[in-house]
Image (spheres, helix red, strand yellow):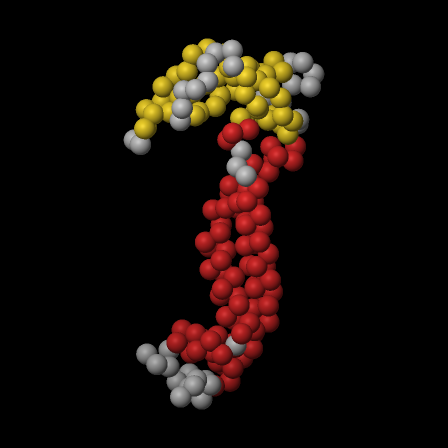
Length: 167
């Protein structure tokens, strides 16, 4: 077991800083990857969207859930061309009544696609996701040159030879 390929690789990776950085970047990407999906879903609305006031139409529909009750509200808004569109928002509180207005963001390219401003997440997760992606790319770039060196050392030492291993 001491001379197995994974043990030898990890030992050499521990000695080679590039491999360590690449592994750290890989772990950061695994942890941060859910944030990337969050970021992608909201970026379209933040960059290509237009905010308008929408009017709540009709009473709230109750949406029972395992951990409480949510309320589904339908809203109506007009795009830049004056065309009317319908949308839905789900909230935990039933503090909105028919006739009230809420801020809605719709896509200029697809005016029928809209989301309530309250549903859009803050810039924080997007910034963290971009940092995680940059760390991962930098780690992979740095690590790929080191992987070749480690594999050359492993091939040069041959199977069962542990002269590259410490102690």
